[in-house]
Image (cartoon, rainbow, N blue to C red):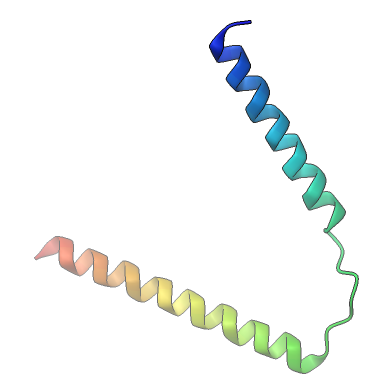
Length: 64
């Protein structure tokens, strides 16, 4: 078995394991209240804004 085939086999095994985990947790097991949903949505929006600011700052630093 060559090195390339060994690496491909290892990567394929890891990808299969990730797919298995994603499939297992595809449906949530607990119910979320409205307050939890609102909090998670707020957190998601906040993180998107932060990433946007980081990208903006990165672009402005590059263009100077």
